[in-house]
Image (tube, rainbow, N blue to C red; front, side, top):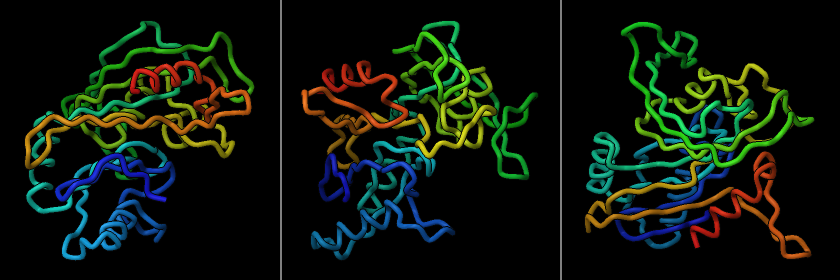
Length: 246
């Protein structure tokens, strides 16, 4: 079922489930773009086509915005290009960052094998992010080779796979990242990366908008909230973010 955070005649803000592509791909799996388009058609917006203006990697879940008109797509694309749109992520990483906050800048390039890596030298594109540690585990867990940390990541550029590559290159790869975590163990759990906030200016009204969605939690019989793996390692920190949101 499509989870809608906001919708008007210009844009629609939705939550992408982990594992669903944000647009049709060669696997022919149902995509979020198709789900948005089907919703628009069912709502009577038959003359419009949903337009992709940014992406989330297929394994990653979280907040996305789609444009409903060509004009809205142009305005949102311009905001992405000049950095006015801000996106924040939660990342569960293996290892312990030395500092409680950091600013990472790397040059990234894509190999002929379609893998993104750090470029040593002037080649590649600049990738930049800031992070803040909001939780740590005291010791290595059964499921991980090292202690874990929960990061709040502010993306400053929009390079392909950049969070996954930059954190791995800095010594704390994302838990469950099959592509960039050298200690990856296949356990059936989603990757520990979630796009939880997006801020942009409405393409028609020019008003500032902000939307959040955190990894879904369920209330148990006692009223306490539990979270799916790998977010359950940091239930209290994510619950605190939810309280701040409300």
